[in-house]
Length: 115
Length: 112
Image 1 (cartoon, rainbow over the protein chains, first blue to last red):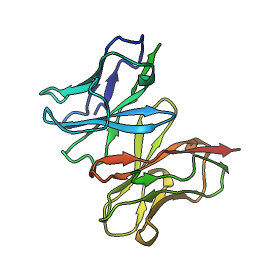
Image 2: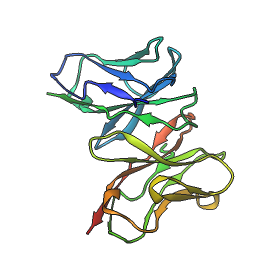
Image 3: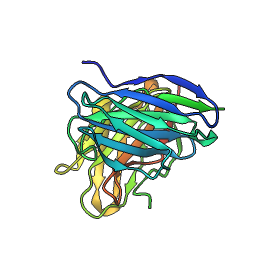
């Protein structure tokens, strides 16, 4: 069974641009969560989706948005990029709709650099 | 408020020595607690989880963790560390909003 796939693996953008990151969960998993990882802030929760519905959202500005499709694939979008958005963005999937209790399967992440 | 804390940012142990990584939580009810490991440039992999019942939990790669309610701790242990255990370790549990939150991580270095 294939794991969680995140594309692209690396991305370089400039300030003011927007970016879209993609996550394909493990087959059969309907819950997808996104995390931002930086050396200073650690792992910060962004959003959680289940069956195309956003269940929870972390404390991030409105420039960060996401969505989930009917095949459970998810995308996150960051508009008007800032230097501080440089981070490793991790996607995790789980089988059920309660990621707080379930084992999360993580992708390898997308490393975003904003210049 | 941070609900899961890892007091040690870095820990260095010699290969073959025992290991204990600390994790403290603040949560009213019995929490769901996890330990994850992250190798450089990779995502996180679950080592073990605690939901209820036996307070000593066995995980993969020879790791175990003990839930101690009286100390609000969920420390990760391994009796003999291997060089391949060098990685960053994250404790995770619910926050006040009942969302999964991660501790700041502990980077483990293994001396030959």
